[in-house]
Length: 495
Image 1 (cartoon, rainbow, N blue to C red):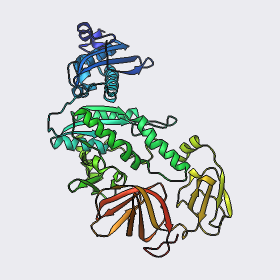
Image 2 (image 1 turned 45 degrees about the vertical axis):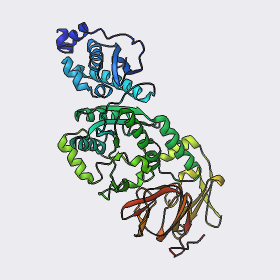
Image 3 (image 1 turned 30 degrees about the vertical axis):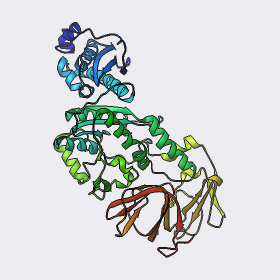
Image 4 (image 1 turned 135 degrees about the horizontal axis):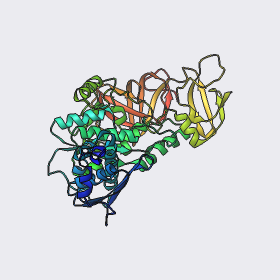
């Protein structure tokens, strides 16, 4: 069998005609992919100038198809803009070399190495990725997780005439259990890239793991250690995701960012409001994002229902259009946050007591509990018992009756204001999966607020996000600091 038939019709020609192998003097960024176990290893080095790839060179180990794929990638990106380089796909390399199906994976290894180099370039403040958009161009950077929602968001924006660029943030994952279920697993990053390239748009990845660990994961651990119940998604959106996306967009010369969240922006200047689909509305986990950032954000799915999104993805033939949704915490893909906390905080045994201080049982750590919890207490009592307080400093969990768990007022701090109330009835949402509760009087002192409830609520945990709405529009959001027991009044709960 000839080499051409074994590897591809133009592999030998590519190897004869290209002299792009070897280290690159003055390289600004490099990326590697593959392994000797699979028989292919590729390293791509890039030198950037004024937002373009001035030169690209490769080093590779493997069969002739691997060397040719690496060479073809370098030839394809040299002299092109940063985003044009990010548009080069595995299919482009396969077609250019006429690779036989059994060797197409070598093009994937070379493309992986290229995108590792592009990721390094985008993450380096010393690397010019340039002002790539014309003055006034409607350019949008779309956060793509590899799921159907963000894919359709990119599709819709492209159809509306925007200059669209896809980007996937790689975040920190629990190294003990990280797998393809994680939203930023290697497979999901690769899927997002494939979808972007199938739409004819560039795709980039950006390493946001250090900021994510510091501002979300470490916060998550410390809040549970202190007896509170944090909402990592709300904190990620406000502290990491949207800000990182906007910073990357500005580096690329793009004016806006977009995500696949089910939320809307209304008014001038734009303010956050509930999405049209009540079952998918995600305004709650976006409510702590600064209005200054939201002015530059687009939510293409805000007026759509989930089923419409899936149908739109199916019609477009987008990969993963029927994949099930993930509900777990993204950095704990096995959905066992108690295991995750136990491995980091250790066993911290203590007492489970009633509201009078009488010992009912023992526990292995207050981080195993949240306010309102009933299952897992394993205590003997005449009536069902619920967690009504967590005293982490004393390692005590307080269990009370259903009446003891009823809350009549919620206090929150770290307020993010979106608009002033206009006098219409207010509601408050106190957890991501919970319904909005009718609110009465709201008092604000400095950066703290207290909202009195018109009916008792259960399971309201300090550490969660509290979001006040008026007619579906977010008024203000903050982190719950304390609650007061329901006393049968909308304005005078018991202390």
